[in-house]
Length: 219
Length: 355
Image 1 (cartoon, rainbow over the protein chains, first blue to last red):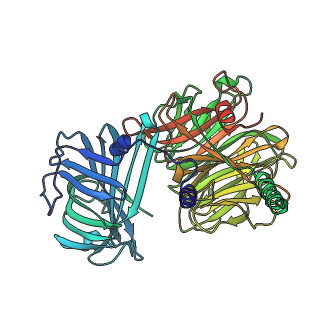
Image 2 (spheres, one colour; image 1 turned 135 degrees about the horizontal axis):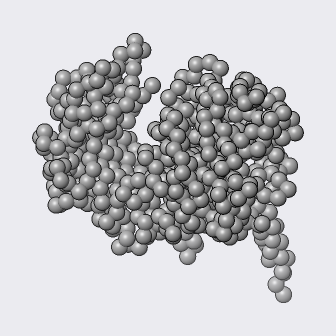
Image 3 (cartoon, rainbow over the protein chains, first blue to last red; image 1 turned 135 degrees about the vertical axis):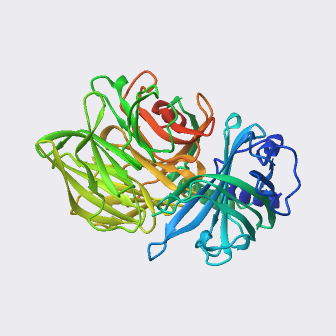
């Protein structure tokens, strides 16, 4: 009995007084984001035809998002490039993001994958980048990846907003094409590749080729 | 016979512990629902400010930033009544009918990230905004390494002086004095404050003479507002506390009660909640956390990624009989974003606040 009380006290101390609670059935819905035919985890880039396939787990959440073609898909999948300047003022592609907005299990969910490197434009593709959380904009064939996903389950007043850098993994960047404007910024074209990542011992694999529709310079 | 003294000692100790525990009330955690929501904005709402129509409170207006667009003005039904596409306006604040020198002004200030400026608008008797003359002023007296971010006014009613305070992502905070001569506005740099890491929300308590700054990953800071005051800050609450368990600390507002009572309201983005602190510091300078609430499904969807906010405790209409709280909402049906209007009476009831 004493042990149970102590355990309860520890649990209460670790759980905010306002923590949300869901039934087991609702948790199964909330913690699993699925879209399309159930897919197996990709093992390589699935090609230049626009697509997005993501299978695995990140934190407490599982994903099986299978969009083998984006044309006509019940989802908005877009790419965004972000540029910076080096000390000499030269433009660098320091970041690209793949964002998915879609209804998954009757909940509007957003998934964002943000890859960063000192300058993705300096590399000859295809190239394999080692994923690591150690540097924000690593030089060479290294990259960081931040995974973020958020949704609001209105009927249950449940809000999910998770983000974090991956511990390790690989990005095989296969495609980075677009027509730059006068400033060197390309808010068009395609970006594609294959990534496997791990965080807290869980793995996630994704293959993507997405149209780039946005670009900005981070001053 | 059993000696009762040890048991009595234990009982006495228990009573002492209970008494001590009761001396600091436990924070209240509650849920409230919004009364209505505005039309969706184009891109990304962030921070609102409330203009109270003193002649006809039901015709009051809510001014909100749409970060990549400018300002959007709403009526109390949440309908858009004015758009001002003036750039990447991040935060906004207002002072109305305040004395500045020999003039009485109603001004809106916004922080513009395109060029790190403070932009000013005048507000007429209908709540319509017009670019002030001049419109844009440098946010800092020197080059700052990162964007202008938060903004707030401080009005000293006794001295008839108005100040605008701009926070930068670097942690630097600039306080400027606003003066007016025949409708021509000027800003004069007065002093600089700082917090350790990136701040955003800035709000001043005009009556008590404090400036509050939200250090997003750090906590809530209080500074003396007078331009010649000590520039050191007092950390009211830090991220990781019971009421503020996770970053970011975002929007701030002063909830004004009678006789300078009330609360400081802070947006705790990491837990999608709003935290209330005592407005009046106690003898040790502390402002205890009273509790927090979230906005759950009701007449509208819940509010997520809590960010900018504003509150008035002026009765505006039947729907907002003891005032209005306006908050940014990061997610809406169809992957849209807007602002939510909350009856302050509902917050008072849920949080057991006194009139």
